[in-house]
Image 1 (cartoon, rainbow, N blue to C red):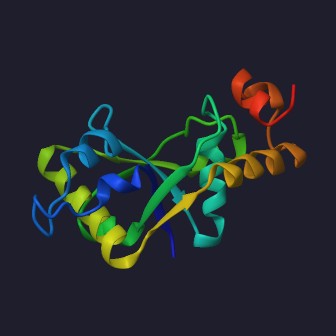
Image 2 (image 1 turned 30 degrees about the horizontal axis):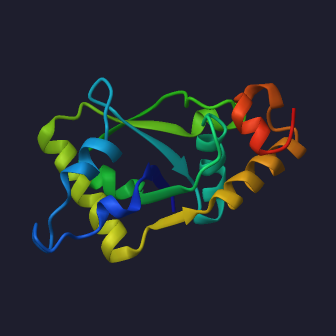
Image 3 (image 1 turned 30 degrees about the vertical axis):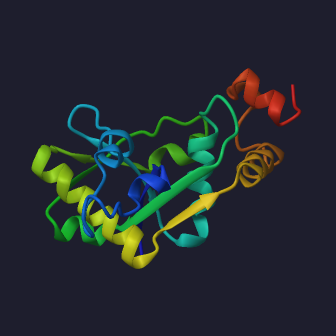
Length: 166
């Protein structure tokens, strides 16, 4: 099965009792589902066993190592809900992962709300989320460097310092 993966802030997707049992916090939408050009950036993952690859794509372009929360939905679920997907080049220094990037395109308020509802259901009812601890993120980066997946100079100075490499 193929999944669409998005970096999130897990606490923003928790149910707030004062908002209602099926509510989605506005912060989850305005922060975690920020769009550009009416498109939402996602990463394609062919199996849950390769979620680390998505974390690598994300972490390699960060300024510093930090925990990464990700959530995923089945690509088929997006197709079933008539979302248009477009393959675009991902913004990551990991060249062999750039083609794993997709956008949900032609979004408006209604469609973005529908994406939020689908994602919330996947997180809350199916448990489709995972936190990669800071130490795991650092190890994913170190492993990719050992395997020569990308040159060390593609990492930011602070991230190189955190990984104890120059």
